[in-house]
Amino acid sequence: MKRYSGIFVVVLLACAAGGWMFFGCVPDEKAPSQDTMQDEEDYIVIGLSQIGSESDWRNANTGSFRSEFTAENGYYLLFEDAQQKQENQLKAVRDLILQEVDYIILDPIVETGWDTVLMEAKDAGIPVILVDRQIVVEDEDLYTCWVGSDFREEGRRAGQWLADYLESQGRREEQIRIVTLQGTLDSSAQIGRTMGFQDVLSAHGNWEMLERRSGEFTQAKGQEVMRDLLQSHKEIDVLISENDNMTFGAIEAIESAGRTCGPDGDIIVISFDAVRTAIQFMQEGKINADFECNPLLGPKVSKIIEELEAGERVEKIQYIEEQYFDTSMDLEKILEERTY
Image (cartoon, rainbow, N blue to C red; front, top):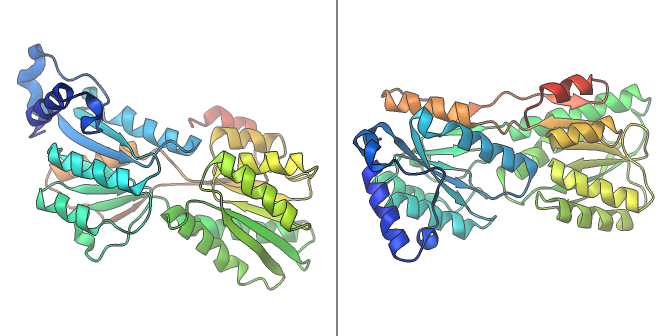
């Protein structure tokens, strides 16, 4: 709100120096025309540093911010895609600081390595709101608050669902062999989901974790790693896949190997994110259960910014509401109501 004209000048200089990529920040909408420049102070300038576009979930998450932070809602959005590289994200945050945005929204690729750049933002008087993934810093005052999912609770709920499902199938005492496709190592989602499921696994002496390997949250890597796991372990009862895109790739690998999955198959599949395509896979009997990671964070972050603009204090940790789905539910109705 306070600095739109400064942003406009910096962007114009960037164009004159050789194009938008000079700073790497791309405005999500047209700058106000000369006719509307007198209203420039009505805009709150937001800098969004996003991880990338590696999954359906990520695209829905980005879409939520873009839909919320519009001129119609009183915002001007500068968007940065880090393409899964922390060095890109660190540079992006510094560019946003240089452009004197009013707020920085940061979805951190990994948990560590943020102390210095966040101190730079704090010194510049720019509040940083973390979303989705969390960070580990020496001083938690370096960021204003965090908004996202309780990843460890997601993992625990998945483990409890599996325990209940096995009991309903009369398999409570069986030896259960499990493999896990982990997400990007050291990301909050990977750490939380792995730890949460381990909390439940530790209470079941007949559950054996054969192997955990990273599929990097992508479909191609999920397929590659699952293919290797099937070759290394002839008996797999359960696949835990820490996001839907890896799950889609894993299902391709399972079917290519002549195996089956889902409620009527020989491999139980538990996934995370619960995007529309995953619910459709569930309808087809290829996924047993999916634990939602709600990507629609835009409205909640917008509300936080409104509170900060009003001088109010905000809660440091703010969880988004989530649910889970399995094949016992009315999936057709769920799909009709699903927005992502």
